[in-house]
Length: 464
Figure 1 (cartoon, rainbow, N blue to C red):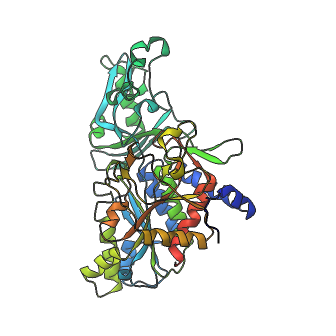
Figure 2: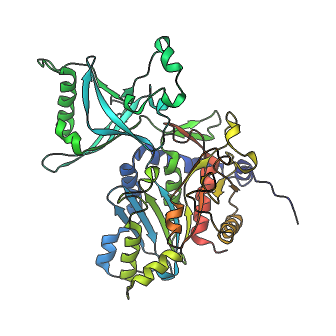
Figure 3: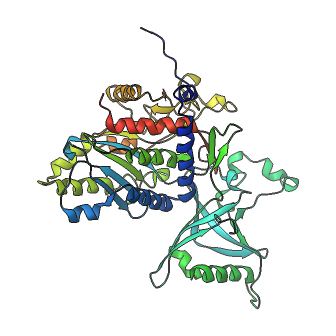
């Protein structure tokens, strides 16, 4: 018996098992998903598109059908911003589900309701940042616009500018170094303020216009493309994200740099792995929710009743519905809260406890608790369930590690884990390490994301 333990380097096992081509294929599919899903709306749309290709029917179709059978594949759409995928198991739903739950929203900038103004013969849009960001990181970058506008006649218009090679992009300006003496004396957090995150969108005046001719030209162009007027901004949802595609990182192409790894990297793995599930004992669920970056509130966040209501509908289709069955289904479930962790960065080693850090290339990371300071606000997973997940991963030869989110008192964070745990489910956080987390461009290891996919797939099917 080996009394010592040492975590494995995932690349070594990948090479030993001759899985490198599978790793690269998985990474390429994930990068295409990132490019197609820059926002929670477009991510949900892409997940549903792929689900339909894989034989899933909507919850509404299942309700019309009026019966459930083991192996049925069902999706539920939450207001175009969240998706739940189900593969119905052999056991009744009241006996619990195997859930992998992540989120598809990411830190970004949103347009204010009345955003357009002109100053210095330039047209700009006012923004309000969403989620935790370092504001200075969003300046001097090519940015794109994504979202929806509901026109005065009720028409819904999808907006996307800045992703096509022929599209213009946008930018938030910063001071030149030659004139930054005052700015450079400020704390890093104060160098760029929230009210200074103004998006530069135009400079050419509209011919024949006397007042605010540049912003008038911007409105003319938006009207030509989308039939929008300035009033339509008031009720629109328009987000600003980095322009451009996900890219391979490193001479060895071992990493991916892109916008939105947190948390589409885990949500994609949940979706991709459930597509491989055919006839599980317990109903398998890939749950992709919105609003995690701002506290999971609202009717598309995890605090909403969407998931619980969907489970109730499925139990109703099973027959002999009662509220107690819904409560049992939630309490008897086992959950991987699919969210990312802070990858160890050798440039900034002091914020992490090296013995308990998440290392890039060492596989999927289990995080028993998150929270802040004295574990405040966290779900602290039970040892029994943590050990069960460990055994599942070992059986499936998944490379895994244990991680904490930084040193004690250094900071902290949270996930959706505690929300499902409040209903009695067994929950543990399980994701991959990320460098540059919450920056416009984040970094993940291809080895880690592949092991995460393997781990989620094993969790759906293996008993331990």
